[in-house]
Image (cartoon, rainbow, N blue to C red; front, side, top):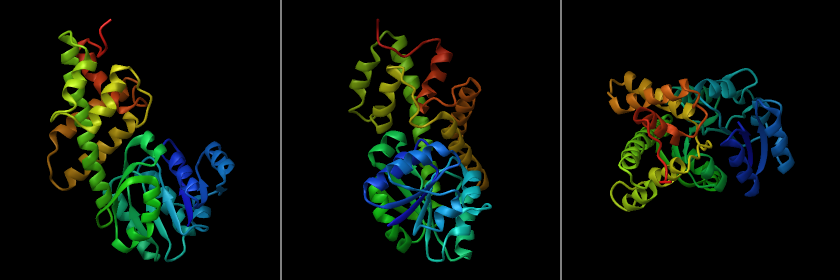
Length: 296
């Protein structure tokens, strides 16, 4: 398949590489030149605009930080929609407001271009090894058409409803992850303050009801003080902001999401916005004047 890829950041670059490895022809673009050169060295075809990508692709994927960037990449001047032919597909795999996804989908439909919103979960490690969880919104026939690409990029791909449903599902995912990490931080601070080894506590509880993928992935990072970003705090804060905005529009109360979002804002104000979201635990540590660590 001739595939376009717009957005070669921490997630997009390894995703694009996996499509190349799977044998797809790839046309790429990013606002930065360096990742374009890297992908071109791997065998991709470089474009000078999002429009240039879409004009040469059957399916164009966008993977950018937030809604405004998606609108610029798809709907803006020299955007993908200007270059996309009727009957081609644009797939936005960014995590954005569902309302923005629906706006972009409507604009695509008016030009006869198919659209899916298909955000992902798993962060950089799963982007690298091609095991992302993909949550899509759109029509079944369009999803089926793009499914071979999703099978390269992820270990699961689920059509969750019409356009916008993918991002509603992703927001639900992000709420659970953020509140889970915050709870993990509280639990391990308490255990460490009590003089326990957090590694032993982790091993004791991970096989029970408290066990989760979040716990298994993030607790070892906190214990080893490794906050290299697989998914940045500032991006998680953006997702919770989008969740709260959507919830307000629908008159839904999300009290724990609101609290988690305020924690993330505080961490950003303390220059931790580019740390991995496992560093949510450091907010709890600061309040307790206690670092989660192995006994010396």
